[in-house]
Image 1 (spheres, rainbow, N blue to C red):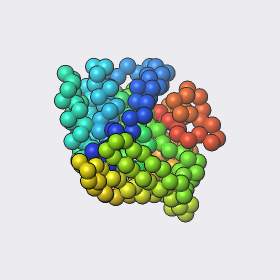
Image 2 (image 1 turned 60 degrees about the vertical axis):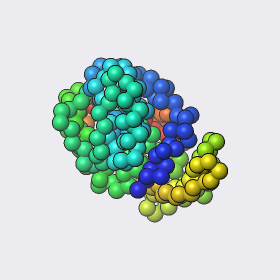
Image 3 (image 1 turned 90 degrees about the vertical axis):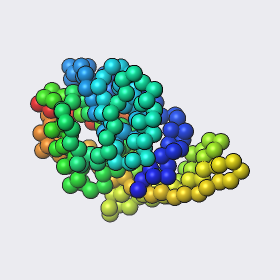
Length: 245
């Protein structure tokens, strides 16, 4: 399963992710919708970095993810807060909340990880039901342009105690980008090697809009990467927002 071995090193290898800037962009989107949330769901929350930022603002937050390892780390981080998020293990296509929320966010291409379009359509339906009327759903995707451009490329992420080498391969027929990751973790003088495979589906904006509408959403808007304007033709990351009527 993705993130089973990577979970323990995820925050160290991704310490350059601008969570605060992403949250500030959410603020601009919510202002445009006239939505002032009190409750929120961080969908595909990973180690809970966004969920914690939302909770620090005083929101009542739920974090949902399918990785037990990532959720364990998220819960540990949340223990330091006076208002910790509540974390649950759920796939987005099986999402079920006890009470609807004002805001659902899914950051860092969590949507791309649902590699069956039919399952993503189900997830959109579940998210719509999880929102209060007037509630807003915000997510971002790695664009088809970006995933296609990763084909054949190799990358390295590292710090003093972990080394991650990964290669991306994109298949035009299936529209799936496969990341093969070799992870080396140091304990004392020894390094332990593990391997993971991550898959992302290259969704197109027009089909996502169609599925959001079919799920019951309206007032759908698309944005460039943290820019309050339409995505450029070669946009690498696209933000999409929708509202439950």
